[in-house]
Image 1: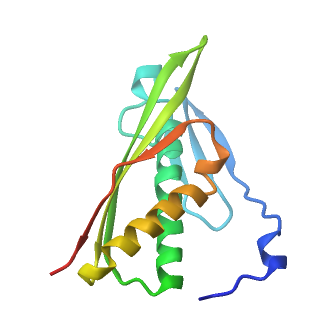
Image 2 (image 1 turned 90 degrees about the horizontal axis):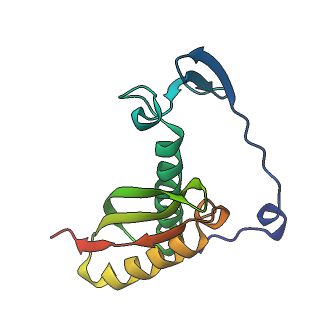
Length: 152
């Protein structure tokens, strides 16, 4: 098992983004060394159709963090994952006078190399769910409806 030093575990990390308004409730999102992304309000809030929105980024952040955490745990435990796909759904509701995400539902579908590893994969997925830093940083309820199978 890979050891993480106490010093590395308690470091502080800074992430920077830049955003420029381009009109019509849209902007260009960038970060040093990364590709620019056009962003907008969703159509239901008078934004553009077909453009990434903060709402999509929010749901995707929870989903991708859970996947990355699971894959890191699987690698450390020697679990052979042959495929990981997921669908995530965020429920945005008007509650207590404002919009907020009441829940995010993750539906990961994981394939493992050996049938005997299904239980291990489910256990590591539960650990990833408990330790995902994005899910731990938000107020929304995050639930999972996983499917774990083996690749015959």
